[in-house]
Image (cartoon, rainbow, N blue to C red; front, side, top):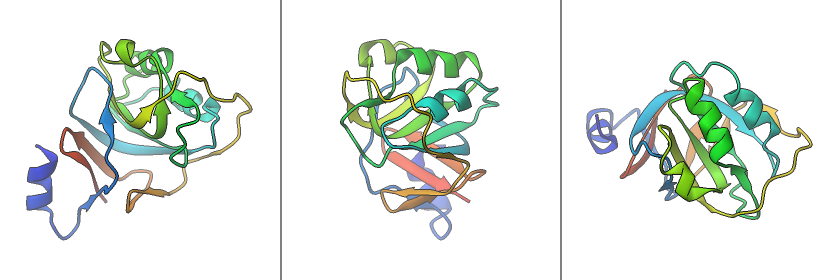
Length: 153
């Protein structure tokens, strides 16, 4: 079901992200249960999460909207696809965009930057994160397609 149809059907319960994300992955529409990571220009916690069985979930990475470095690239996205993740939403930047477009993985991000992130392991996992006027809670369901991102509790 498309995000537009979901908005029509669940108007009172659904939240639609006001921020415009670009789809970078080879899968242009995806959905799944939310897993969250909050980090500041450091992708260690995101990599750890994507190293686990995905069970068709979606990793929501809140990088604070920073475009100074990439929080995900083709290697992490390939790892995620191999581990059964449906996709990821990155409130920040990604890199390796040509390679990302060829992977069987859904990926939405604010933009791209070829610089890699820090590797200190800072941040938090499993917390509520808010951006684009939407709060993403672990266990909620997120839907992503060319029209945007929507969340159902």
